[in-house]
Figure (cartoon, one colour):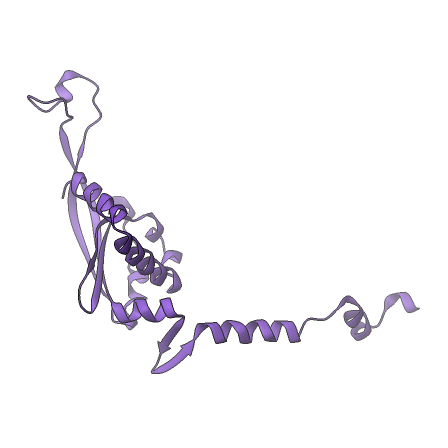
Length: 177
């Protein structure tokens, strides 16, 4: 893999509004499933995708070899029919130019060095992306509307809010003695 390929992929995303929206939807799913709470998942860099197929959405992310993303994070995606692959690869990046020997022969570009990286490819069902985008989620064959859950939670909080006077009445006002 070359750094130039990852940069071209990023440029392609920014040139296409639909690719950018798909990538944001993909990221929203990862965030909703709390993937970023696992070590190093937040540090990944997109190198390929989003590749859209009829039923699937696929993205590949890269991490330095020493910062492998926690596999327990990937395991959180498995119950949602996501397919995750880990691959040890290398990426060619230019060296920092400090002397004339650091240039590639016949060019004004730096020599390329291979750096070991982890590439994690996540293949996600488009149905999952649209469910979470719509605000509903199916867990154990039961459909849950996330907005209704949030509203019920807020209603419960609102119904159980006590004023300071209510709290003093329940505890017995210390100032009354």
